[in-house]
Length: 462
Image (cartoon, rainbow, N blue to C red):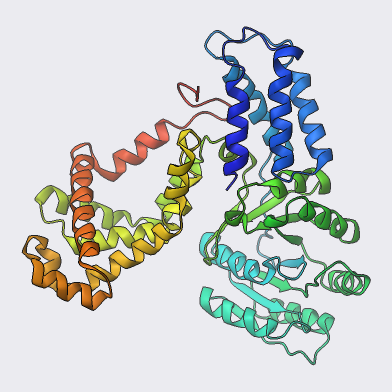
């Protein structure tokens, strides 16, 4: 996410190193570089112009603080302007207290709208502890209703049955009546998408909107479509009373143009972003955290929250005790691999780690390659092919045992050797962590290193 944009921005900041003050002359090269970076990222031109002008207005003539370099000073300004561009404040869903909340989802066909309905329903169920009902009014796309029914079953929320023979507005009204009668907390209505914006589509969704009077009308837009995403969102915003934007497929775009254009052009808040195919790959949108990611400073707050949510603390303590006693084995190693997989694998952690922008491009590409996540699955398969005795005492795995494990897991002997080697490396790392106070101390250390809002990390990036 944002790899190209981040790299270009950092290159422009480095050009200012050693300047005592920021002038129109020494800023020009940097601003041109930033402008080119944004255009390359497919940011809409009016957004680029407004952004550059806002940086110029604040930066030119500014004396560099003694404790900062010129690059850091500009980075601070750019960070603040990015946050302003992305929305300043977090805009949460307007969830009603002790009453039904109605959410209407709109968007073009192929934007990821139906999968976003399922992801949002899961987020509401697991993170907000809401009883959720979902319904589809898409009677046009083949199997659209069945798709949502299947997704609802996968994420464990209730599905309101509908049929292509019904009228979309009737489905919406019946779903609303059922949600009220059965005392649901949230009703999410999935609407039909089209391959392009047309009058019939707009009229239909306007009628549904008027009939159910939703508290939230969210427009789902494909982040990979760049500035076209912002133009489409603007067109919908002019036809509907949108309350927010959901940007999908951000994991598939290294440019990031859509996320920088949508808020400015629609004047509607971004409420969620989709960061992967899995049902839990939906994140609430935080402007300051996203600005930090774009500038290559990572997003440690989101990473810590994810660690706290997905890592079983009791299990982590047990593992720490096993390491201390010298009884940590391959079964425990498998547990660690599965936990990493649940957090989106290596690729899912990359843009949340600070300092990634400083790595050589080939290293970043190798680390974020999704084939690494396939390797996690392969390692689990190899461990599953071992006997209990082999998992507990890996030192007994000789040549003949390796051949049997390789046959059982559909891998090669060198793959078995890699797993054993990585297990040894993990064991050494765990031993060091345990000596320093375990997982709890590690979390506290991470939190203590978090910068205050608006400040740079200790030592800066230059």
